[in-house]
Image (cartoon, rainbow, N blue to C red; front, side):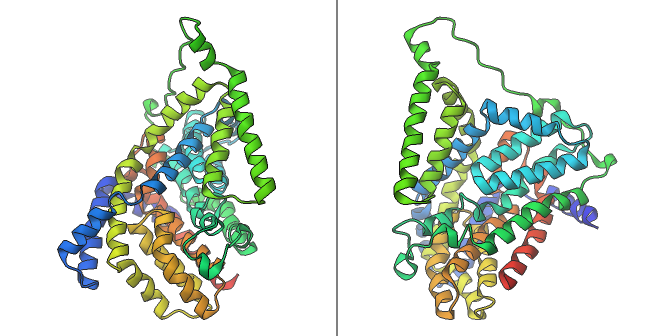
Length: 438
């Protein structure tokens, strides 16, 4: 049954899903029409809101790009790549291979979403090189599906935001530590249930041998190793100096140790970026190696740089017109104390289609859902995670965050999204049950 369901969605997506950029343009029109119909704003008002929002999230965009780039650079270091090659030699056939890709991706995304996206793509490529009979697109889809738990993991931007002084609902909730969100027992149960069972789901919906599409060898080619410097000058010595690199990395390690000693387990967004930056610097051994890794990594951020402004414009319409608030309040209107986190999750899933940024979505939903939940007696930490779950959930059908992974894999959105629809349905059931009964 799962195999037939997957094939149905694969065919559907390949026929009807447009390019990710055009997808964002069409969502802009949808948001515009909905706001025009529901908010009472004029068309000119909405165009102005759109234009004002177009570049209104550049600071957060830079943080997201840095998470991607530092995660990519770390994942492409020789120790990490060697580890991935060793892992890729373990599975004995396509079924074991896809299960391992899914599991590794889930664990990596729990640690850091940028790192997880890159590891998933690199590992899927390595598996395709070593394991005969695999469907490359299916492997990459399995890797991307691990991203469905990112916002419940250590780099989740919403739970990290509310753990940081000055967040937008601090006057109502105070600082909400990660022990109450990311490391709460109920979040860990929901998240690790998904991580541990998603590999089984992919095994059950795997393509039959006659449906497997042979991978183009050009897609799996490694970039050439850089040539050693032809002249040994002071500049080339400095660029290739392990001592300088390690001294710089040691400064970062000292900073991090001091940070955690003085501030406790303060794992905010900037600290996560810093950890992966310093780890990448150390593992690449020399300054020039890290420079090359970052130059390669930044290529995957092109889609984000192009589309983030579009989603900033959509966010401008959604937030300034009040449309996002209207959608959130639809679900609040018929919620009870028991169902409020669940309906917050559903609202978050819908809003994420238009604002696929954890920080942007928090700005939209946080000030509305948190006080409404508190009025019903709902723990603010559960409201926070309900929003975070909604954001991560519909990323399976919102192609925005697949772009970096697809850039590394050299595939298109239509190659993977059909399988991800099944992931959406499955994880939606698990999260819903968790929010109702845990």
